[in-house]
Amino acid sequence: MFCAKCGKELPDGAVFCPSCGSPVHAGVGDAHVSGIDALTRDHDAQEYWVERLIALVVDYVIVYVVLGIVTAIVAIPALLTGGTVFFGVVFGGVALLWGIIFVLYNTVMEASSGASIGKRLFRLKSVSRRGSNPTFAEAFVRNLSKIYWLLLLLDVIVGLAVSHGYQQKYSDHYLGTKVVRG
Image (tube, rainbow, N blue to C red; front, side, top):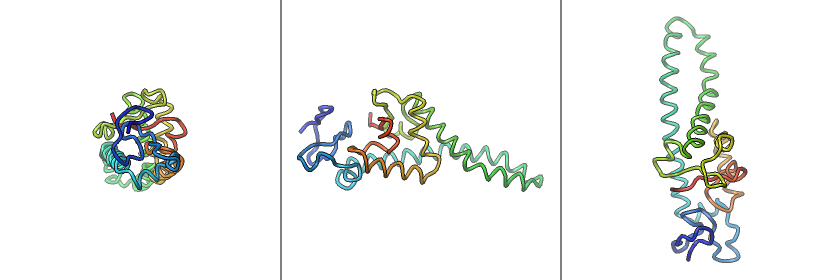
């Protein structure tokens, strides 16, 4: 069998094309398989999301280690001089600031090259419906849920529930963007 969308040969039992992520319409009952169904039945979908999760962790480590070092450089002198009030105010806003910086890191990386460092390690790339890198606005919207882990989890779950492929979070589904291998 070959994919009706991209023409690549499909492995036996594939629910989605491993190349483009399009659902394989083997029968009438399979025509509207959700991304959640794909995760329970398709090894390629499971592998894809493991790679995306590890890529996300790599990006978190890169950004948050740098931010941690900068924050420590600022906070240690404040603590040594008795600035505990300053310390409390600064660290009260640090989580939000770090989340914003992480969103901006992903936005700039995807708008400029299509992939963050973590995605590049797994040869993953964010693309718009035009097949090119997402615009800055598209990259910002698709990464906005990364400001807080619970928002990201909801973005993924809802996206998999409403999509007929396994490559889209809800924000991707809304924008027409997706993360592809290549």
